[in-house]
Length: 73
Image (cartoon, rainbow, N blue to C red; front, side, top):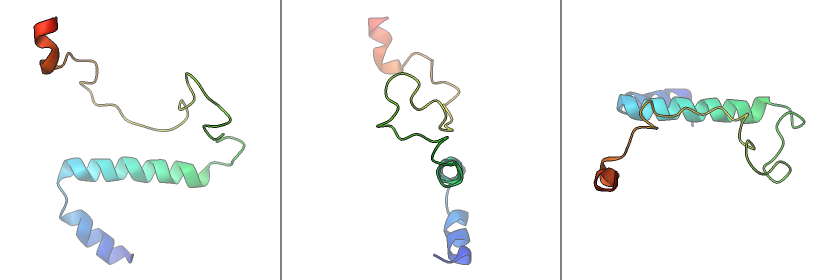
């Protein structure tokens, strides 16, 4: 896809979607710029912390109680 066409599509997205695209671009950049020795595949490194090096962003309210479970709390 040509850059102008991609830019036109980005201009039509809401800010929340642009934030998701930016996060995905960070992931793709990490995936293609990290040498294989520093980026072991999941099959080589399993268990807790296996995704520790992959950049990701959590929602600020991730740890907040969910409304759906209010009756159980």
